[in-house]
Image (tube, rainbow, N blue to C red; front, side, top):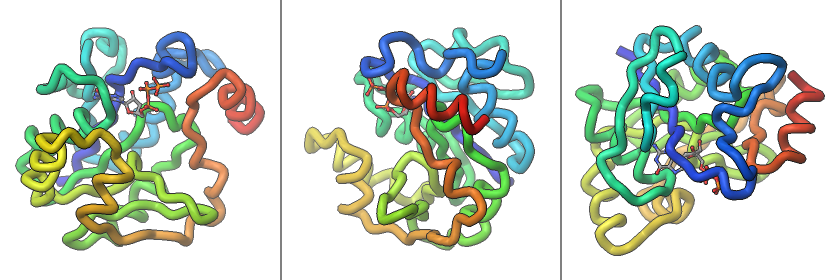
Length: 187
Ligand SMILES: Nc1nc2c(ncn2[C@@H]2O[C@H](COP(=O)(O)OP(=O)(O)OP(=O)(O)O)[C@@H](O)[C@H]2O)c(=O)[nH]1
């Protein structure tokens, strides 16, 4: 069973308004991500602080974050607490160019470690496969005051998938309005 958890509980401070709902060619950003996830995953969950905001999305299951604090690892914590599977796909809601083929690729390549994409030297900690077994390490990291996804995966260890052609364009996080402009040129 391939479960995908889409993280959508952030503050969009750099974007200035809720980026997950920002319309791109007539569709909210998160819907682009959901449709790609649905093309290859058995179950798709939206993990958010206010899940009811996403009730317009069809065929997804809405989950409320367990933790109050707002940072992406809080979403990962909800995902790993919810699942009964050995591993899950985790996806950021702000990557509207993502492709189902990439989700399938990283799923097939993943074994028992965190598996992430490395594109042009950069690791993407919020698009990957996370084993349920890393939950205790995540709890310990959060208890110690840790907040950063990249720092967490560095601590625990991860495998990388690097052969992303022809989809290297798909790895843009929409953090700013300028990112949205670039994304709109590609979509
Ligand atoms: N479920 C969940 N997702 C989160 C949380 N914080 C961030 N995310 C999501 O994680 C992804 C990457 O986070 P950021 O780029 O930091 O997003 P953000 O916090 O909305 O944006 P900034 O305020 O500009 O940093 C986005 O899809 C966010 O919606 C959280 O507390 N819970």
